[in-house]
Length: 343
Image 1: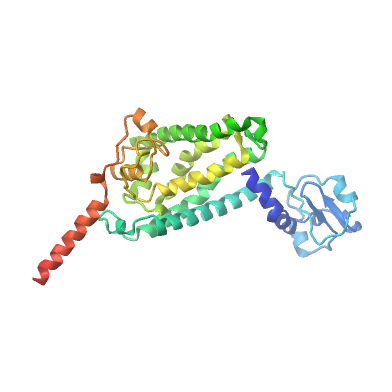
Image 2: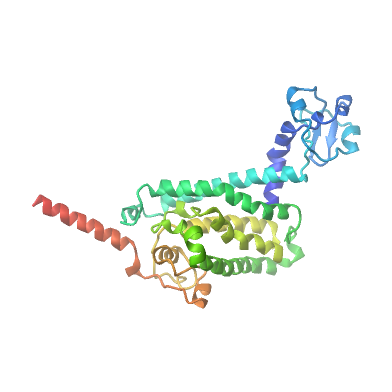
């Protein structure tokens, strides 16, 4: 997330924070210099006359303004620096909350929308256990969960951007072999962790109030992928955040894996039951997760089948378990009934 925050600061947030909390609102000295520079905010500042907004915000807490800010004349600019620099904790909190909320909404609607439009079999919506207005309810459930999930996740992102993780930038620090190994390691580590978290959520102590809201969708669509109780969604995401505080991972790779994780979560909720492919016994794909939603106590894994095999909760997808067979049976019965009426 620190990579995303730095890019957002460069492209937009430095200027937004400078406009919202200009340094000129907190010092009268700025009016005596033709051009000033805020080293922390990376943008030059210029003198500005007192305004009602400046007077209104002048009592908001801010870090001490460095002497250089008031004594280093540079070329005049129309950009005003912010009294909240990039490394100021309150600014990071607000920026991360906004970026995370925007990001999860974009990922959700783009990936889930594409999956729903081009991958999900819409005939599944005729299944007898597909709820009325289910897609609308899935989206509403997801949107309600996002704000609290973001708040729960914020401490991890803050720790990351403040330099407490093991993320690194230079591939040479650990070499190319470790870079490739870390991808597999990340997936296996998080898969096993999520398996046990997910399985624990099916324990009667937790299931009814925590995880059952997600199992409301017996025949899920891609929009059900994030339709969790907020705490459920957060707890299952902990392994992704924990990994980078335990093991080194390339910063850009981590961002790519984080996007992939959300994409995969959406993909396995398309109720697909394609069976017979070569990787079926290794990859925990949409067919496996469809069985989990139908039978509850099987296929808890996220990416692979190994944890389920080890925990004796694995169920092999089979063509005769395809929920589409129920759809076809219902449709055939309707056609038979209609034919009888015509006779």
